[in-house]
Amino acid sequence: MADNIPMYSIQYFIISALRLATALLLLCSSVALQASVQFATRTESVKWESEGSKFYCRLSHDVEGFGQAVFEREAGEATRFYLKSQMPRMKTGKAALVSRAPAWSSSATANTLSMVTVRESTTPIKIGRKLSERMLAELQRGMLIDFKRQPLYGGSQLLQVTLSSIGFGHSHKDYLGCQGDLLPVNYKQVRKSTLYYDDEDEDLQKAAQQRLDLIVEYAIEDPSIKTFYIDGHTDSQGIRNENLLKSQRRTEKVMDYLIEKGIDKERIVARWHGERYQVKSNQSTKGRAKNRRVTVRLSKELPNILVQSESPDVDLPEVQAEK
Image (tube, rainbow, N blue to C red; front, side, top):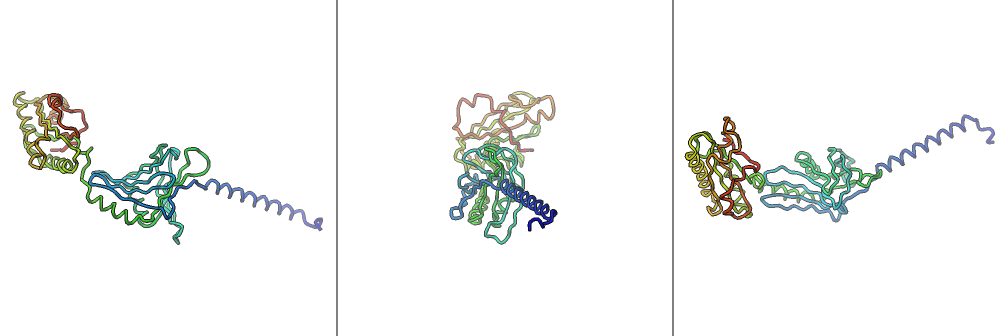
């Protein structure tokens, strides 16, 4: 009976079988490549925690077996996100940031939000304001957030870290409430400020007053601030002794303003230097404008009498209050 089967039928059968085997092989290969080592907290253990003060707000989620996902906003700064791991696990490069519906949802929606930079470290991923806020919005509407990247140890499997949205809403509300109480600036932003003056000007301009108000607002809330160093300077125009007196008057007006706003006089070290310690050349108009200044520097250490006889810290980064 077999002898009666046409040759073309046998050939057709063989070709079909080969095609099917090839398709199965490709499917298996695809599944192997897409399979991943997953890190996700069990449903019953998912917890988002909100904490903060007037200096920072933080919303965090522990990812079992991997580490922690953190949204954070510092006073005076924008929201940021970072992923922490117990040890370096992700390979340097780009990770897919994906928003997807949970398994119990009727929707099968999955959307790649971005490709984010990964660095081989215990903080492999750091994300700025715009994308962080997008992630918050996705979690708020009940989506899961996945990070997918090749693992540090190599291999074909992807490493996937998942942030669950279970219990997110309540903690997110607390996180938003915390942000409403943040100070307008942080320590780095007010650690040193520079007030500039016109040629003969000694009075505080509006911008200078606003800057001092920010300094006072921060310092009153931060008990670690122990000392205010105020240093007055002039350019080299005019008589040296008169310049020294002018820098004294400018310094004292700044000191009086701080005291009036509630800063204890005992915490203030006021110094005036005239035309000494220039930061720019006095040979140009722009240079002289930079030299006519009063700096206000905050310190977390008690006043040191030795400091008062030394040169002021003119090399510290300056945060300027324009005229």
